[in-house]
Amino acid sequence: SLGIPAVILFGIPSKKDARGSEAYNPKGIVQRAIREIKSAVPKMVVITDVCIDEYTDHGHCGVLKENTVDNDAPLEIIAKTAIAQAQAGADVIAPSGMMDGQIKTIREALDKNNFKDTLILAYAAKYASSLYGPFRDLAQSKPGFGDRKSYQMNPSNAREALREIALDVEEGADIAMVKPASFYLDVISKARERFDIPLAA
Image (tube, rainbow, N blue to C red; front, side, top):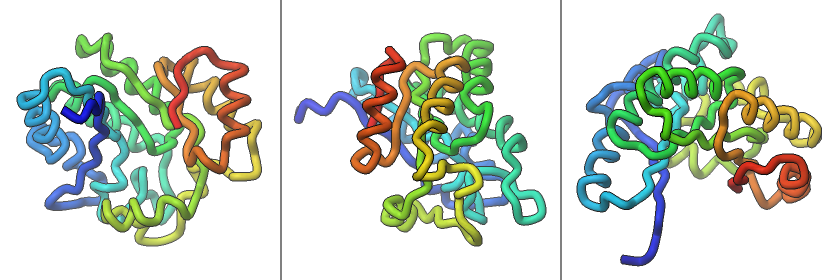
């Protein structure tokens, strides 16, 4: 009734483990929320975060291998999560973990499971930032050790952002996000000059 056309959902599960397995539980918190929203407001566009940091007991976006984040290991988990969310009724899947290859993995999984029309909003240029602190407090997803600089972007490198966006577009992203937005208006401007897909900020 307020004219809000879309919502994005993030989940805080009742239990966490090293692999974030609650993320793809068909009865998990986000999957339940999608069904409730679609039942109450069928026309609401539901966007879902696909990242396992909220679901892992260590708070990182990937699977750990000797106290370092393994970029490839979470791809299967991310794909399973995207499918669980699409099955629940998500309109847009939004992977935010900055894991290499996640867009291709999700696109192939969605297409294979007859969700060709489900869109992907890629957090294509996500910079490492302390601005995420309040969200991490709320989502109970602070890293248990270290930081996320090994998979989020270096703030001093604008060229990398364009490479990351280009890769995600190649892999099947429908929308590309630059995050945080306010400090990276130059990146948004450069991305608009180069890419014709919708940009999110």
